[in-house]
Image (cartoon, rainbow, N blue to C red; front, side, top):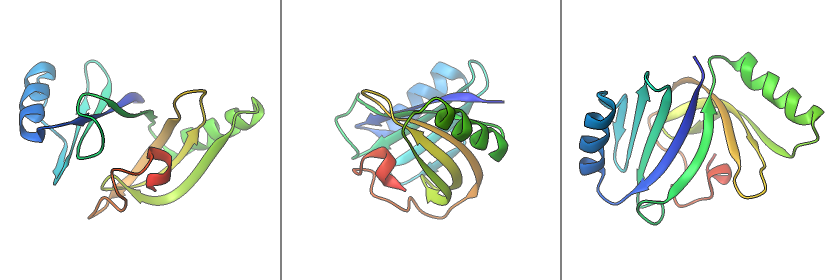
Length: 135
């Protein structure tokens, strides 16, 4: 299943985890220092929380988690066909996961289209970096 990803900057990770667990009736799928992610089935949403990455309450980045590497490749092809600028990254370690992805450049926000290939032991970047520079 594909799902929209929403990454938020938060001030208090524990309070945010408690709130979003209650709101979506789903515990986090992964918790690390300064980081948590939720894989929510209804509505289909990948919710990412970062502390120390920006103004609390602000958007960190947006994206779509897709179901396989072929879906990432299809988006890369589609973006190329439409003349959209993008930054392609393969086998990168980012946000505690190994991923294939493309960052499609929008007028105000870049969209991360990605597939998680496996777990990674560390963030592998500074959460204060721009999202597309993160990995």
